[in-house]
Image 1: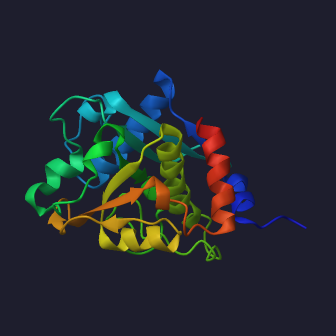
Image 2 (image 1 turned 60 degrees about the vertical axis):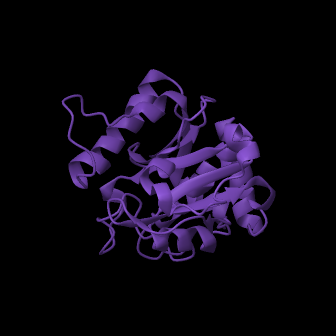
Image 3 (image 1 turned 90 degrees about the vertical axis):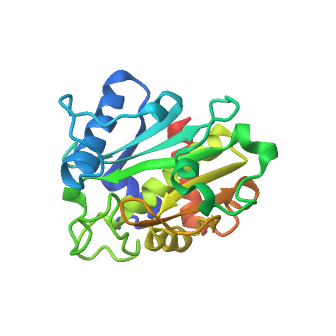
Length: 234
C-alpha cells in the first residue's frame, strides 16, 4: 500500500532545492518575474525576464520543482540582516508608523530575517480565485481530491521556516494577507501580528515569529516534513 503521510505525499510530487548556484538562482528570478511582473503586475516587466531587487544580495533561496513535469512550481527567499546600522527590512519600509512600538526585539535585530517573495506559478494555482495572489489560497492539506497542489503553500512556508532555523534567526517576519496568516496558523506555524494592515498590492499586515515559539504548535507530520526540508536546505 502506498504511504500517505504528509512527508510521503510531498516528496512523491515535489523536490525542494536550495538555489545557491547561478542557474538555480536564475530559475527563481524567472519564476518571480512570471508571477510578480507578467501575471500580477506588482513589478515592471524587465527585458531580462528576471525579477530581482537589492535584498537578493543577502538572501537565501529555496526552489520547489514538480517531479512529474520537471517544472518550477514555487519559490521563497529569506532576507538576512546585513548588519548595517540603520538598515531596514522591506516590511519595515512598507509599514512605517503602522508597526507596533514593540514589533521587534532590538537585542536581536542583527540576527533577524524576513520571509519574502514567496510565489507559486499560476499553473499550480488552479482553483477559482487563486490567480490574484502569488501563493494561492492554500486549501487544507488533507483536501487533495482534485489536485496535488495544496501541498505547495504549506511546503513553501515550512521551507521558509527551515531557512529561518538553519540561519539561526531569533525572530523573523513576513508581510502577508490576513487569509495567508490564517493559513500559517492552520499549518501550526505561530506568527503574531506586529502592526496594522497597510495597502501594499492589497491589504497586508506584518507578522512575527520567534525562535522559542516557532515549533510550539507544529503537528508531528509537519515537524517531520520540516526536519526533512532543513536537511535538504543545509
